[in-house]
Image (cartoon, rainbow, N blue to C red; front, side):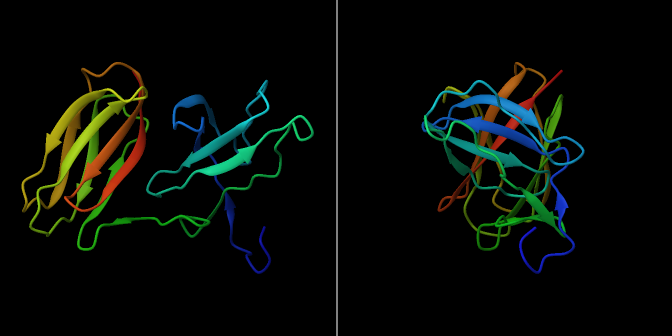
Length: 177
């Protein structure tokens, strides 16, 4: 644990995505009950690790594997009072907040919003290959929850993009059955 932090907890059950430099998902893992995860048989090159913790907005972590350094160990993703280190628990677009759950999702994805601005947010669902799958529009006065039906979406990993006219936010979503 970082010096001075005594109440940190491992990111148990976090979804961990291994991405290439083009933001394409290569592998998926789930942190175990000790917060540990592993990707094996990796080639020597740069990778990005994207931790996903429900209710927490995450940033990618760069990992460089080389011939001299073929293993990356000691990557710690810690949650302190429901905030992953270096990561904000809520998305803030000025006066707009979004929470997205459950993830993984099997039928209905909930986008909870307290939007109070004057633009019309747009939600888009993209495949891992960048293909637009669906587009959803919010009324400018929407407050509450938007329920996105994903029962017609094939199981897999997708990127959910929310654009409020000024700022875009993306989150990896896993659809399961």
